[in-house]
Length: 419
Image 1: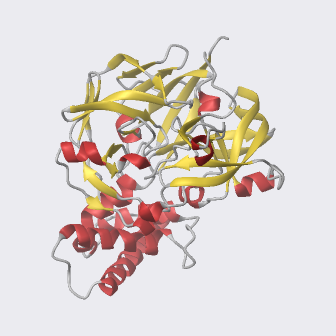
Image 2: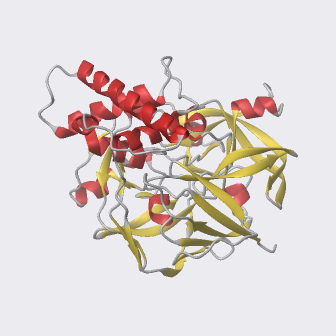
Image 3: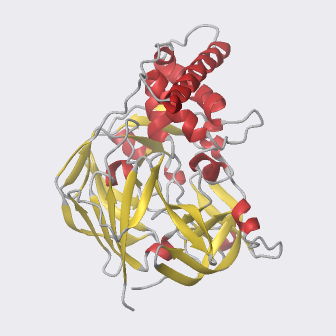
């Protein structure tokens, strides 16, 4: 397999434009880890939906506690929305946007603006209290021989995807809970969406300029990769400059989790097969708000909970974990990483060893980022990127979906690629 140079990138930095060799590693951390949950679920319910009585019926003490929390959150969100409008807006989109902002302020954020460590539990309780059930997409067909390409100067893959009548290259991203299309493609398909407030976006993606990013939540037409098709998906619309260069969107787990996904880095091929049973010897995966996590050992310590992300170039370590493992060297070389919301400062480090079950790789490049929003939102301490995953042929399997529309379990079979 052709392993790319030390640090790989998709977009030139300002120094590149000045004819130097410095480039930015792409961190394809999902812009919308909660898109299908908040921006596609409670957003769809909107303000009036939050006025509905709770319909959840539970018996255990644990569930009763969750139900009580959900009812409490519904009341607080209702008060928040009422406090932000004197009269209900004439447009439903505006009402839904206010509702989503209040969902974040009440259920996800602390008063100081930090993401709550129990954010995912609160969102789940909110879903239960409102009685909302995510629409279940319909899938059909399979794809046995789809060509992959590397994003320029990166290890992340692109794949040809058809959305409605348009076919373009999308990023293959297991770290994205929802698929994304460009503004241009949405306009061509005449798709209308609900704007996502900029002060919400900063909790969904990497980069320091989320307030300037324009994004909508919308219902997608049928999405297809060769003969593998899924209908009934809710996704995001983003401007082209917020999506990796030369791609028109992101193919997320909302699509991929309907199939067995087999990635062949050695010959750049992708298979999307009918779902099969988990294999006992595989790495167990746990679903978290539309992403997949696993237990990882770093430098012989752990295990730690990491997200597995084919849309991220390098291993990523949260600052708290880096400090715990004494990896956060003040003298470490600084770099800039690229996310959906622009660039962000990071530190380059080297990991002596990364272990995912029995699979171990030594001397692996990684970056430490200070932005803890994504980590706190998902309850993870880092991200397994492509500089680990592309050393293996990967067979991803996904379990049944929860009422939120996410796979709660999965498995990953890794087969080392012969050098």
